[in-house]
Length: 109
Image 1 (spheres, rainbow, N blue to C red):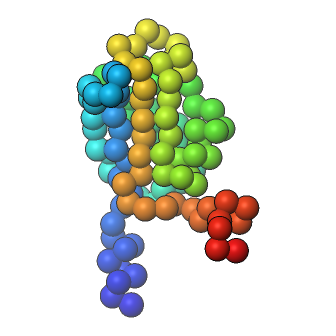
Image 2 (cartoon, rainbow, N blue to C red):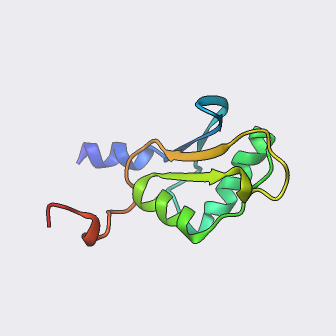
C-alpha cells in the first residue's frame, strides 16, 4: 500500500533532446504537473520546445502512438516547418510505460 502512494506522488518526466549526427546538442527534462494525458501531448511538446528555444514540430498520430506505447517519439528535421540546426528531436518518457503494449506486440501471450 505504501508503494502505491509513493508511485502516485511521482509525476512523469519527459527527456527532450536534439541530435546532430550522434551528438546531443540540447537537452531538457520536463516534469509534468500531473499524470500523463495523451490528449495533452501537443501542450507538453509546446512547453518543451519553448523552453529549449526551438520551433514546434508537426505531431503525427504515429508520434503519439510511439510515445504512449514505446516511451519514445522521434521527430525528423523535415517535420518542422521552420529551419532547424539539428537532425532529430527526441522525446523519451523516463518514468516507465504509460500504457501497456497491445497484445499483438507482446511475446508472452
